[in-house]
Amino acid sequence: MNLTHEYIRHRRGYSFGAGCCWIRIYEGAAGDAPVVVCEELPEAGSARVSEMSSQLAAEAITEHFAVGLPELPRPVLWIEHHHRRRGPGRFYLITFPSYEPHPEGIGFVRRMTLGPPTREPLTPQEAAILIRGA
Image 1 (cartoon, rainbow, N blue to C red):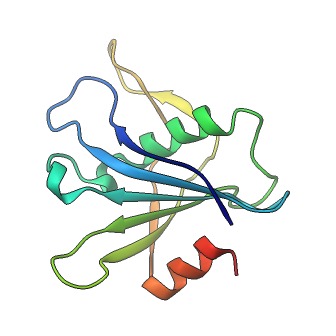
Image 2 (tube, rainbow, N blue to C red; image 1 turned 90 degrees about the horizontal axis):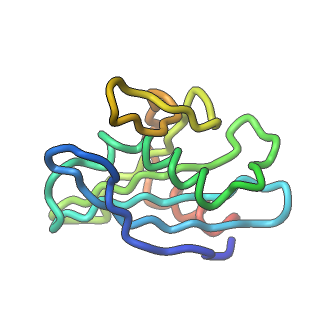
Image 3 (tube, rainbow, N blue to C red; image 1 turned 45 degrees about the horizontal axis):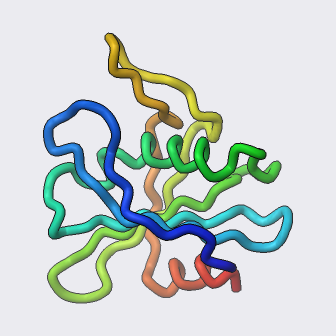
């Protein structure tokens, strides 16, 4: 896997505790699902990554994969990393009901989303294997 993008992402729109996170995007060989690691920034406080993962994923897909995603059951491997005071933290593999971003919300503030996510716990070793592409 090759690291292609790495940046701090601030949540868009109007809300209290808007939040931000660290995004790293890894792309593998043609036909492989890209891996996106979304890491909480504990010093940033405010909203947790788990509260905004569907919107962050929709924004990342729109910005970085406009050409399209591979035809796979899970076309993006979205990994959340939650820090802890001690140890490596907790990792989760996130699955979305759809990988096509669509608008959601009422009123004048509508955000792109992928729908409610499902979380599957990962060990730090499993997360490392997915990122390395081994």
